[in-house]
Amino acid sequence: MTASAALGAVQTALYERLTGDADLMALLTGVFDDVPEGTPEPYLVVGESIETPDNRHGNFGRQTVTTLHVWSRQRGFAEASAIADSVVRVLDHQPLSISGRRHIVTRFEFSQALRDPDPGLRHVPLRFRVVTEQ
Image (cartoon, rainbow, N blue to C red; front, side):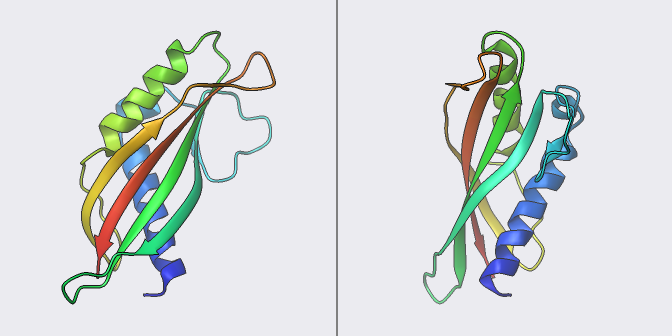
């Protein structure tokens, strides 16, 4: 499997895990790679990823770091933070089914509550590290 194919497989597994959780999906209008124009908040965007080799003891591994973005229009951070907490519950140290790879672990690395230049918009990026092997 090429590096780009492995990266896509991780992103697909994240998307499937997120959209497969009914409690999380009840909080969102959707989970997107490219948000359709006019989609109302709150939603989650599968954002930027970087993949690096993690080869050890004769195994070919990868570490994929992906940033997810919570977007909300509710005043304050209560809604965006509740969604972020739910995303962490769904992904942190939970199994993923990744095509062509063996999932080792998914780890939550950080989140940050941000105010957007649009005063009504709230943004919470969350970063996760997914470790896999062939």
